Image 1 (cartoon, rainbow over the protein chains, first blue to last red):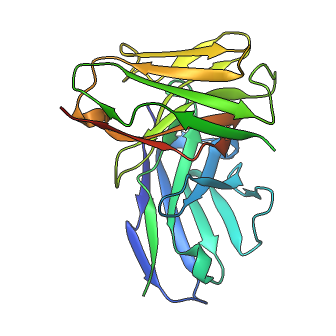
Image 2 (image 1 turned 45 degrees about the vertical axis):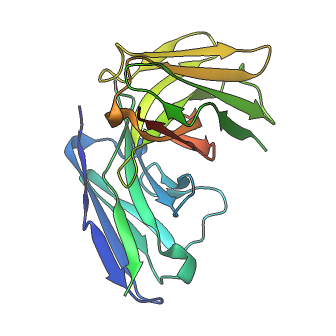
Image 3 (image 1 turned 90 degrees about the vertical axis):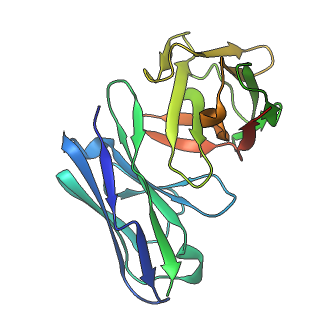
Length: 109
Length: 118
């Protein structure tokens, strides 16, 4: 089973700042199988990025994904008030089909 | 627009069976493009995939839960259900029903909190 490790656990930033979130996989994975989700308190996760770098429908272009192999990054270029949330990376593979990272909380500094 | 809605008891006793239903609107669980399933999230923790099915009847379960889980579909009602046997406090979580397309979850239900307690 591939393990996804997200860092940092918590990121304290101010609106307007740049956020850089990391997701490392325990072995090399194909970029097509890596996604990112945003989750706000009391809500279900929302798909942000699929295929490591493609934005889902309706996602603002301040969100971008990159990476390959074992290192993947979600970048929020300029934090808006609504971006303070928890972010999860997710990998699709042989059973278990879906695995998630532990999450990074982006909080207001 | 496809919407998913979970329903079921919010409280289950230890050793009993957790049963939840997901009602799908705006789309059919018999669609050939999507997989349907369940994901859970213990309070304050991360996400765990439970299992999925395809319209053809193929079922996939997380190996860590496979011995206790059953997912089944009722196409006449456009619903699918989750049964988790022999629950313990560790099964306390928000349970989401979900629709997967390809490698990602594209639609989530709002989630339902199920607490395992006597």
